[in-house]
Length: 274
Image 1 (cartoon, rainbow, N blue to C red):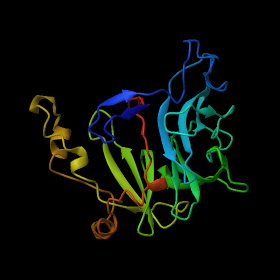
Image 2: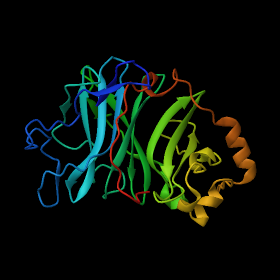
Image 3: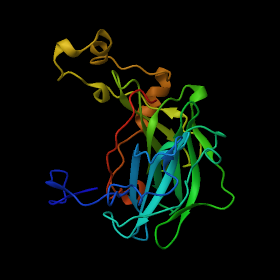
């Protein structure tokens, strides 16, 4: 975790702690469930997501090894710099990820303007799922009683993407996601849905600026990346793209999840995940 001394993106930035702390190098302080298929305490963490809740507490989620798969873990704290308390078991695991198995990663929390909370995550090869959640006075998340995972972006229907980040804006819900190869043409897309747990079916046209590599030396660009400098493509019909473009707008800070997350951390990503 890092804090800006100027309280702006300009910094300077200084480290203020960790969501998953390794106090003495032994990794004993980690949640017990974090280990790989060989029982090793594997620190291959992905996609941390931190949000301030309406009650002033902070909720964090992340992906970590849980045996032969990846699971989503949660933590909660009174402030963005911790100290963080972790659940003693995965929040999203193969048994409850909606796909009946496989990995779960890239969690994202949305708190709507009405105060309802949802957690999104990716199951590779299947798509993006969501489930309704509650939070207690301390900031701990729990699956809402009776709630079931819903597939909101279906890989079988050609909806690729990872790293979902969902915002509420002007009565709609917008899922920003990353897609493409990490070696070329990796870009950000956006889909729209009418409810936080309804399918995100309206695809916006792909942003040219998301794949702009004009600042790179020409020798480093392949023929495929050179064509991406000036050409944007989409699988959405042109009439639908025009309609989507008219509806998709950059949300203001007042309408972002939980009135904009106070802090967002960075994590390493495995090459080639989509």
